[in-house]
Length: 261
Image (cartoon, rainbow, N blue to C red):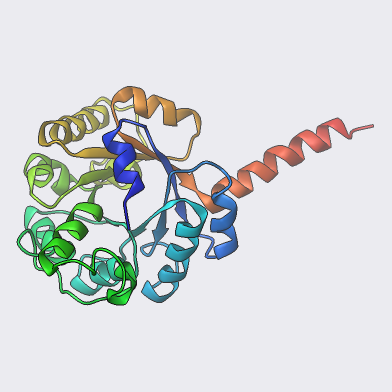
């Protein structure tokens, strides 16, 4: 369960991922041919639960893409089950307070960092693969290191507490959700608004100071490089369904233009 995404982040490799919404292992197999570094199985907006997420995690592993999963809510089972089926990190939406993130650390990290419940599961071959083959302390420390806890900054409450949240032990990085953050700030969709840009800089600065990574979401391919230039460590580009529709639309527009008599 070595986390290749974590290694890429540490090396400054600028990884690019996408949200997984289409719900087919074949889609993940196809995504594995694209060069994507990671995908996020969306248990918040997608119709998935942990049982199907396990299938998607397995497909991602076989396809060479680091599997992350977005939780449906802030709760112990919502976090625990995704990690136990092998997701190598959880992205957690709708964060408002420092106490919520402290609870997330308890759910996602083993002692002494948190209070994650222990059980041999798919993540360690049900007790027959590393790190389960080692001492329990080694096992828990390894899992803490290799599984990423990534709260989303998409509310004013999270933004106002971002320095404390980013600095918490057990938080590995911050995912910025621009749509909901701009809505929460009262400037929906105004991603070039000075207040929004200041918010992005505040999050980036807080994470850099705490030694944590930042990833940003965009639906526009030409904004990915711009995000890296801004200083984000990873970029999450669109979602599989949107890219599929867009690609076919653009191809059909060219076909029909070229096929005119």
